[in-house]
Image (spheres, rainbow over the protein chains, first blue to last red):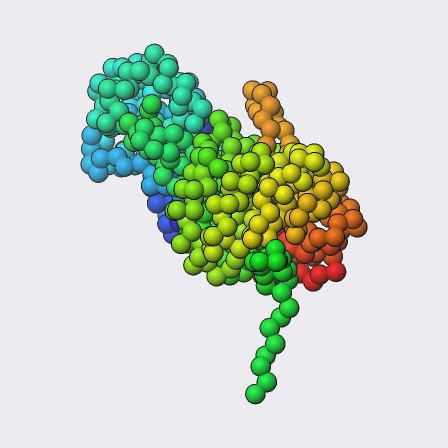
Length: 224
Length: 271
Ligand code: FES
């Protein structure tokens, strides 16, 4: 993890219609889907860094969901900390990928979706709401059937959502497939370096911190 | 040959048996730099006057239930529950790393009862790696503050740490009871979650600064001991203002996670 500079190139929208920022960054600011950065405006006195969640990766940077409450404008220089976490580890070639964002905008999973298509995987998306997706992506709504079909599952869920998910009957269908599933746990981050415990989570074996141990975890590690 | 004279220390505290000497006017707020190893990732520790450990309790503590971080205009609220392995385990695991730091180490203790406070202070007596104790007294009255400080009196210099908003009399009682310095900690605040539930916690960010400055002005008029103060310091002008108001040392919090060099690169003048 390192600090680099980034430039706000444009204010735009995500494919899902959310406000977004197009950033130009040094190479490697984000190297895998599921990684995030923390950023503050250089010299701006932001009380905290904001979490930048990529929705598209570009050769010269990334586009991320516009963090709530920031007033950054094109031309602003950002101080970037990252990339945080190890990102998703999907199969290197092909396979049947099931992607879902539980209780969150699906935009978060778009970089992984495009990686899947680029790797010639069959990609299915569990849709909570109608969305515009590439035609080769299948939209499914029955989790149990889709989980039986998949050989790789990637979820995005908030920390609070994870605990609800465990008690949700529909998602109980995932438990038998935990060995092939990864989860991006979204939680507010403060320090991003494992010092503040804002992102701490009791894992199956020991206490973990999303910012340094995640934000992507094997599902089996975080299901209690 | 004429020896170059060392600059005068910024702060010297002594218990009569042991001392702590700060050569620079900065310390970290407890919990903002981790146990030591992580700290090196955030800042160049040599730029601090001393390193303050995360809050340590006698027994291990687990994290508070989420949400633990809420943001508001110009500030943020942290409610982590101060998770830590407990003082004995922290000493076992980190005392060697603390000894290797290039600056003195201040152990921040979370105190509840005088008996517990005495037990914790006793565990630290022989630990050379720790040069001073910062006593987290919490939201207490004057007599309770004095009792907790007295319970910790011993070899190591004591700094009484009370949240911003604590009445001057409580700081004075702690000093009277034997604290060699006082530190103004983060104020308590509350914010609603999106679902409307209230979360109470410690408040940080630039919005805290005017209150911190006012507190330093008030305490500096009254207290006979040095003051460590922070709260919303994100640039050299704020640090300078706190020092001119009477703070001997500036406590850095959120800026350590954003752009610490904005402050640590400057050396504010005192009053
Ligand atoms: S964000 Fe501070 S420990 Fe993870």
